[in-house]
Length: 114
Length: 111
Image (cartoon, each protein chain N blue to C red):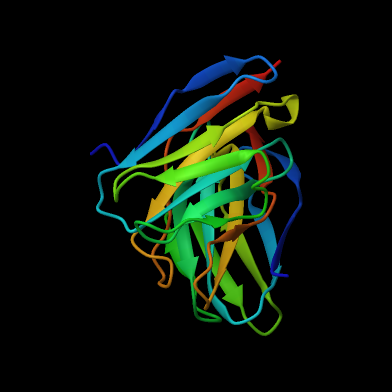
């Protein structure tokens, strides 16, 4: 069972470079999410997609864009990376948002911006 | 604004100890409260609580919710080094909004 797959697992960027983090889930879930995790800060929501064709801002959306490519895939793009975006990024999915269903997480992307 | 506060932020115990982790929340239209365990990588689901006073149990771990006092606790008995992890608490309200996470409690169990 693959579950939620994120790529890449590690990335180093220079300030100003751009990159896209990829996420795919094979559980036929409707909702997908991008979180970032910094030391002592827990998980903070960047963007989410309640269903295919919709995206919404979370708590910390500045400097990021997302694309819900289809039901399976939800990508996160950094257009001009900044050192403040050094973090661990987690993609997650759930069957639906307006229910009790739990989130399933990918294994994370460790991103360093120099 | 919905909020989740976990305490303590970090904790060091010896193997065999019992620990209690706390999660308090301020949320409009409460729907559920969830606990996750995060070791090296992705958080993994532990419990989901929706009703007050009903304990959820899995082996040495248990959790209970108090909707009147707006908190939940996660108990771990007879701790083992494998329990070392960050424990995350999150809530969901009844609207169409995502989970809100607390900052987590980092538990270290030493032999």
